[in-house]
Image 1 (tube, rainbow, N blue to C red):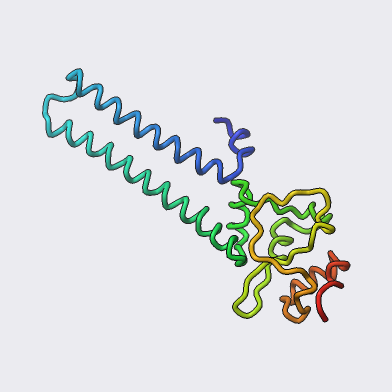
Image 2: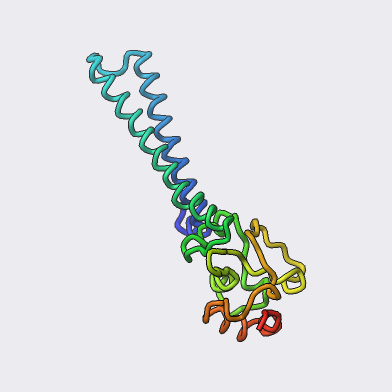
Length: 185
């Protein structure tokens, strides 16, 4: 695969493609070893044959285990956080966006100077033990579809300004003053 092609593919897809390629290579090696064994092309020493087959089998097992760990670390962990309304790290956000689990864009809100993560993070709210996302309602997100599952939400009218993080108050006051005016004083 050419470098330009690799850079055009989102990170999540590259990880999955790499793991799939490794699994296919291991499976191919096992098939080749099995065919060779059937046609007596492997060394005559049975212990060497067994060693080679065990090595390939162990390699395949290790790759499958690593693929499972990748899924857990990069997909399921952040996905559980997202679904429960907890804030994501920047890396978690970008990974979930790269595998198209969420499509949260600053452009949805007409905020070109803000990054997608900055917008997403400022819509995440943690008050006491409660975590949720601020739901701006369909009037703010015009004619666009947010493709992610939206975790527990509240409208701005249900949230006190004092409960927002200082960075959230600044963000909404600066970038979305109409939305900021809807928070409870």
